[in-house]
Length: 162
Image (tube, one colour):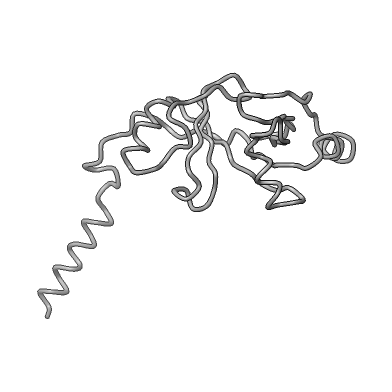
C-alpha cells in the first residue's frame, strides 16, 4: 500500500512540476486579442442610434457586405468593438438568426490570429469544423474564417488575421 501511495505521489509531482508544453510541439500560430463581439439586430438604425446617441459611442457608417449577406456598423469601445449585423439579401445568415431571436442578440465573437491559414490547418487537424472551405475577406478587409459552433461550446467563433 505504501509503495502505491509513493508511486502516485511521484507521478503527481512529475505531472504537476513538469512544464505543460513539454513534448508538445509549439503551434505555428497564435491566438490574439478579442477583435469584436457581433450582435444581430432587427433594426440597424435604431441600434446605431442607441450606441451613438444614448450611450455616446463612436460608430461607423452602415456598410453593406453582400458577400457575407449583412450590413455592418462598428461601435468603437476602448478595448474592442461591437459589430452590429443586419440582414442583406435573401440568403443572409442573419435572417434565420433573427427569426429565432426576434429581438436580436449576440451572434458571434471574433478573435485575431497571427496566421489564419496555419490556424485553420491546425484546427481542422484537431477536428474543429469550419463553415467554409477557404477564408474570405471580412469587414476589416482581412481574411476571416468561422468555426462551427457545435465544436466551440455553442459559440460561433470568427477568426480574423491580425
